[in-house]
Amino acid sequence: MPLDLPAIRQQFPSLDRPAIFLDNPAGTQISKPSLDRINRYLLECNANHEGLFETSRRSDEILHEAHAAMADFLNASRPEEIIFGNNMTTLTLHISRSLARTLQPGDNLLVTRLDHDANISPWMLIAEDKGCNLLWVDIDVEQGTLDLDDFARALEKRPKIAAFGYASNLLGTVNPVKKLTRMAHEAGALVYIDAVQYAPHGPIDVQDIGCDFLVCSSYKFFGPHAGALYGRYELLNELKAYKVRPASDELPHKFETGTQNHEGIAGVLGALEYLEWLGRQFGAAQEAAWKEAGFSGRRLELKKGMSAMQAYEKQLSQKLIGIIEAVPGTRIHGITDLERLDERVPTVSFTVPGRDPARIAEEIGRHGIYVWNGHNYALAIVERMGLLKAGGMVRVGPVHYNTLEELETFGEVLEKAVK
Image (cartoon, rainbow, N blue to C red; front, top):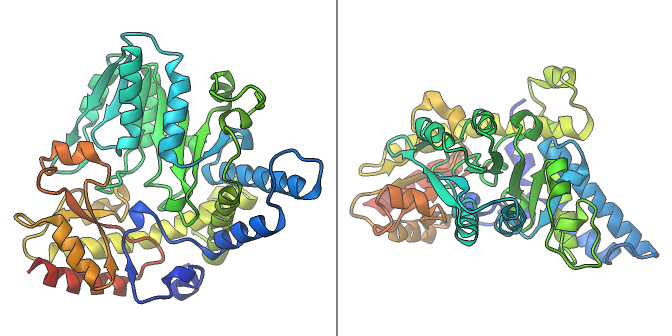
């Protein structure tokens, strides 16, 4: 079923203003169910853990439900495999410290130049602390894709950890994560996937991928500023957690240090309830096959919602690429072949030779259209492409609540801004 954009946009109160939000790769607008969950939590059950009174019991119930919903969203085996934290960066810095205890001087760690720095710097810091070696996997500069041959060569050095992204937050490239995971496991590496950029755009199945860890942030998929990490139960259970002594040694609590952002976690639950609503409203052609594969209840509705969204966003990608390419002087960095839209999300970055990306973004912003500029923390990409001193790129990122008409308006403004 096609998406009903007016009905969807009604679920986002902040869209009711004269603005076009194409800044979504850095954070989407929040859905009404998420806002409602935050408000209800703070008004009805704002309390700390394990108290012998009503608000504490209700708080614990909501936090448990959020873990279960996130497990459904990622198709994890059990709620205890979900760890909540401030954001992907903080969670990665935290869990990398525990993983560092398993490393020895001289061990190799694999990172890629296609990644956000949050999936590079933590491993750089661990390598520095433990005397490990960092293996850099290169990219195809023209296509904006990971160099799979270079990935295979790096695996010949038997890294202990392979860290890579699901989708590039700057170029939109979607990596073949299932294939990369299989290759890394065959080389004896643990796999750590940054799915922050992919999570708002398509269904994620950690069991099918086979990864050891995967992390994302709900403010990228229509919720509040909170992060979530999936880890295989056996691994999380074995790893030492850096925590205070009275804190529980059980999962997931041993990694959720101190008092968490309870209202934020409630908001994550609300964001997932929005995506579940999307699945009930708009369905998907593959529903029968997914039921046969064992998906049911919330897991099925989430998969339907994300798949319906993904189908519409291919139209957004096609439209946006065509609009930018039609403006003389622009150059898109990344996949532009319309036959390869399955290999990208609708995050599109471009440059105009001789023009400062900041000035272009500022001019577009004057017209009430919000886009990003710079390296957007994908530092390794802009360094590899030689664009850091030139100011990086202009990044445009629609999501499923954006309309084709909004992209047309952006195109008109872009043409004026470039001139």
